[in-house]
Image 1 (cartoon, rainbow, N blue to C red):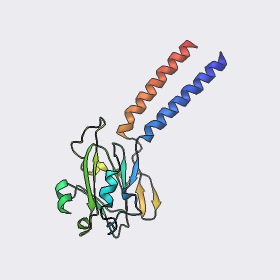
Image 2: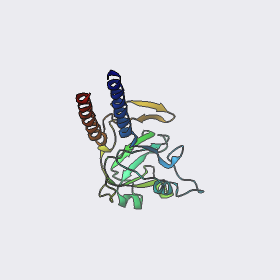
Image 3: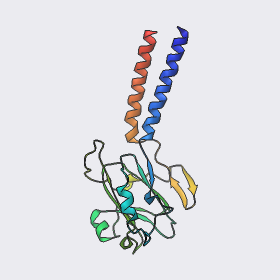
Length: 196
């Protein structure tokens, strides 16, 4: 009987661990363009960013990593109109640290371009669409500084271009599933203990 109880405890602990790990796997970090750096596309592949975004399905909790030398480039989030006309004035969000991490927190359409004059016209721009949780078309993007973590208080690590901000330790998209997992595991544990 004691051996069965020990085996049951180990099984439940293993199930809880798998559920917790599964919640973390749902989010991905994408290096924009799958290139060494965010930059002006080559003449051999002028549509690199358009092709790249079409080959990826972005979802809530994912993040985009833009790598570039900070002395040579930047990334700005812009409106659709500014994206289409390559208007760099009044961006929604300006990132210039060389390792810019954009966290996708809401469904919608997102438009990015280089903040350097002339780069957008040379196709250094990115459009992505993020579907809502039910797979329906997105309504509106998340604008403003909440799209990025607070880099002053976030831990970071060094890369060739500087620091990459780490995503916040708690994410609204993971909080509810983890709570539900804990409640279900606790209830299951109580039922099994009562039966044994």
